[in-house]
Length: 408
Image (tube, rainbow, N blue to C red; front, top):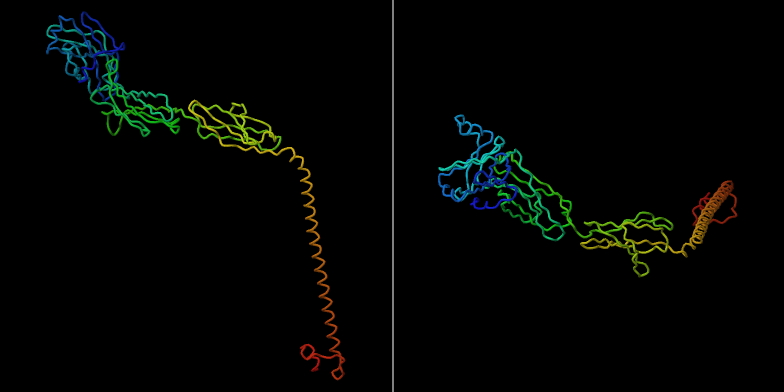
């Protein structure tokens, strides 16, 4: 099924001409320890020799390190075990020499020579294919288009597929909630690659997000998987978000104020400034991100910043700079004097009130002392008078104090 696909090769392949036979194969091939390797191969022979390509035709790939002992008595079963297990999957009668080497390991890294043998002729190519078997997997290749917020795009991860029967396992981390499709494609040099395509709709939340394409060796040990990854950082273009104004300085007459327009945008936004005052809006004609001015009543108003890039624009919320006018400034000394006078009057009233309260308490204490002294004198006078003497006072029987002396 795969052999019929290897019909055209790019300039990366090399054509070697020996006598009247032409062979086309890649110059170098790479695979990973534990995997197999497909060698795409085509050859041509003169028309008069095409009939010689019968069922007896045999193709072998001779290993360069054993070159000197091939076809000699020293080449034995031990040497044969050093060669990889090779299977021709192409149709030799149709001049397709595509082959697959299986169970490769790092010891199989070598130069391999094409050898064609029939009943009528034997031909060995003098140029070799360099095969490298590494312990690590090749890094995937990730293609990223221009990413714009809201526009559906495809991220494409490409990994070599040296073994057609065991394609690599590819996964995306994170998957971004998108759809994933996979397909195997024929490269220009006859090799195969697996394309893993992630389709999603980017947003500004994906900006500067790290995304990895991970390739896993399907023939390696499950308890110790062999993998390779390629990590990229997404750069999503989006219009300004969350535009606002930052104020530096204390809003007071004569102070220096600095306004900065801040926005979340990619690519970075340009800026325009506006001021609303007395029901009118005016553009300040400033395109810088930062503006500075001295606080005066003429600069009072609501300031607005507009952030804009190629994808859109956004206005900030209004920032009120409220400064008093010149008439209010002239009245400030008078208002301060009035406040001081009111404060002095209040303190005087509090003082008078406290002093009057102290005089009233002193008079009450004197009256109480005088009343107590008079009562004591009266009592002493009544007790010194004899009982038989006629009292010139009249006692009230209803008064308990007076009845005491009446009964004496």
